[in-house]
Length: 302
Ligand code: NAP
Image 1 (cartoon, helix red, strand yellow):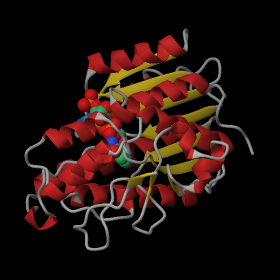
Image 2 (cartoon, helix red, strand yellow; image 1 turned 90 degrees about the vertical axis):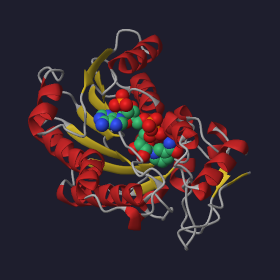
Image 3 (cartoon, helix red, strand yellow; image 1 turned 120 degrees about the vertical axis):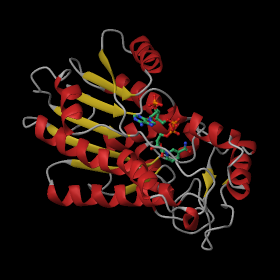
């Protein structure tokens, strides 16, 4: 098995201006080989620069570049332009794209309240279509490199949650698309990583939003109160351990709470933060509703 961690790499991370993307940038920045480049993408330039400083504090001298791009409007040409502007001669040993940017996008409405196809198209353009397009662009630009495609997924790709129909639909579709990629590109490494429930701005903003469904609000308040929201840096470090260990099949959906992560971390997820255990029976964890689609998750802290 050829290593993908520690090599001279080109690493593109979307949604790197805050939250999990910022932690992914830091953790990847610590482990890439000499001569690597990190390309950080999001809309907010100032926040991207903060991420860049955090990475360079941890890894002085590493090439860290920032590109502002709105993935809700990006197309093949703009995606190609930002990668080409930063990839030098594209002769990196490994090329890694981490598709992390994502939005909830439904403002407390049930799926039967969604009728605006333009609005849905905008949601899926950002959360699905741009992801497919970026994978294709990335594949075409690195003919000499070992390719790694990572989808930041969610337990909600597998389980329903009331008022999160777009989110669940988008995440499920992304997982499926990455599984197809694994079949079509057998020499590449493909991972659908569900990072667990994270203490990020996405969740603070959800709790602050008066339109949030009361069931969903109670679920996340409970996760916060019990300390079950993970530190994003712990989940990012777990993902890096998984990439190092490579104890998954290309295309697999691996959740932070899966045994594979525990094994990659050398035995215990407890070593990286509060442990939450699923009670809803799909082997996953994190923001999840039970079979009715309306019940509050059984996530608890050990
Ligand atoms: P977050 O705090 O809301 O950060 C989202 C990131 O996406 C930001 O950097 C944002 O940057 C970027 N983004 C949003 N809209 C964009 C657009 N139109 N164009 C380009 N970039 C855009 O979210 P997070 O919690 O870190 O989540 C990161 C990923 O993890 C998401 O895919 C999410 O679904 C997944 N996830 C999160 C949790 C959780 O509990 N938080 C659990 C499971 C999975 P700008 O605003 O600067 O553009």
